[in-house]
Image (cartoon, rainbow, N blue to C red; front, side, top):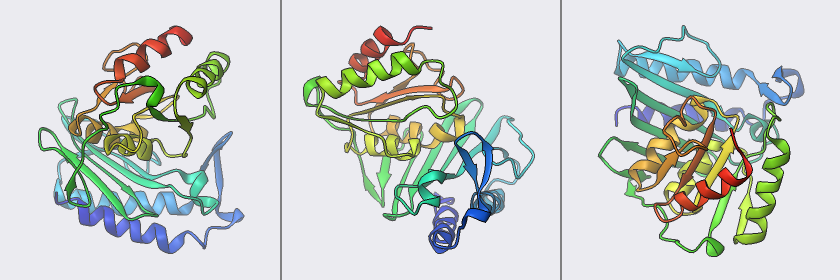
Length: 257
């Protein structure tokens, strides 16, 4: 994929800057939602590099450093997924990029920068980690499964049932982790480190790159209703093909629309 060197170069920038970000560099977009010059510069570097590859493609980006343009072909970019982790010098943090053609995800890249792990996939082409093909886990027994999730930080409308849901997963699985980067949660599920992932109050740039990587690794992605509106519907369930339906059934018990 021609975009991989662009993502790696931007990752090198993130690594160089991580010890330089001070409190004076942190802006608050809204409660618990932060941005730094690193996010913005990273996004500008990605846009510049990707424009050279597909000059006519538009962009949907988190920091909106460029005109937002969702045409027939556009990139979705999160220049730094896990900003709160990053400003505390805590892994993981990542770059997430996806390509959308006629409303379909056709390519995705997630670069977990701190461990130099580059995940990527393209439609019907398989999913890869640093050049080696990856697959989801084969776990089928819910009690033996291991999950990632995220905590709501701006939308607390489901906070009470969500806490009950987390309690259920804590009591009935091998464990539940909150890493702080949805893109990383998705690709870790794609390569079998997690058996599934779920979260709500997410934006398209949080999930787009990781979602197609997980699908190409054999996983299943949906919203909390079991439908396909995970990209813009602000909620996602991702799992291996044996467990996705079980995760969906459990979430439906606790969170009803």
